[in-house]
View 1: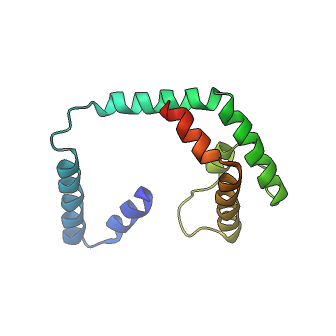
View 2: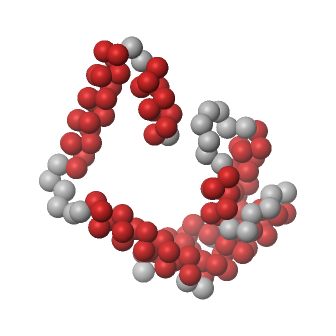
View 3: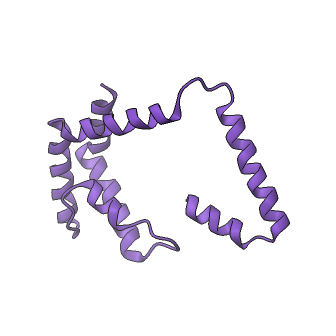
Length: 123
């Protein structure tokens, strides 16, 4: 989404792009005003909990069930993260990308992948 927004900014006339960039910067300042946390520490914590959750026994089991579900839908991904690496390029999504995303969501719902993942990461 950020790439698309930056692409749109680049296509605007100079004055309009400057106004849009200023608006984006102002929004960022407003949203972080009074924040007492270090964003670097937040990102480190987010990464460490993500990595720890991936190793927790419940998450790999849910990922295996998700993979089986995706295989039944005609897709070959060992983990949900493998699919994320393949898609997300610039431009409009291809039909295969959309059908992959639809199956991904259905399989995550069917296997409880997201619920298990977040409860593990939250703990």
